[in-house]
Length: 129
Image (cartoon, rainbow, N blue to C red; front, side, top):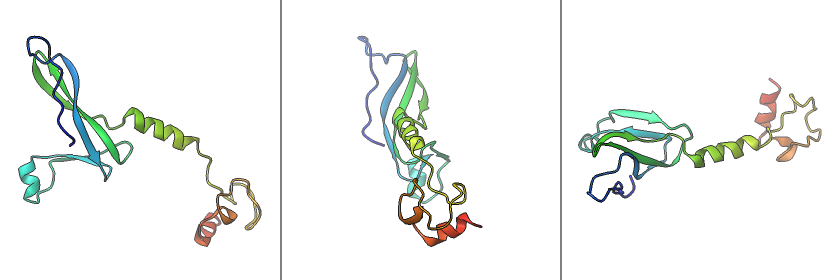
């Protein structure tokens, strides 16, 4: 987790009700785990492991406060950045497929990215199974 951030307080020094970002967790495996750190150092499995909705990246960590008491820890599994990236990925055209586009092997396909639209000959053969 990245540096802890103090929740916002009022003039009395009490934490303001609501969600407060306290830091971020870096994800490289597409998973976030919750565990007591002393057990992780002993090589035991985490208590809870969850998969993110997007995969890798930085995920904000929030505390929920009510009546100057911390009541929940919240980790959104998809952020605005992740949603924007998904939207851009979904705009990409489908990869070329000779079978779907009714083309013969070697025939020009306007959706081609590489030679004949395939990176490897096995891809083309897979398309015709």
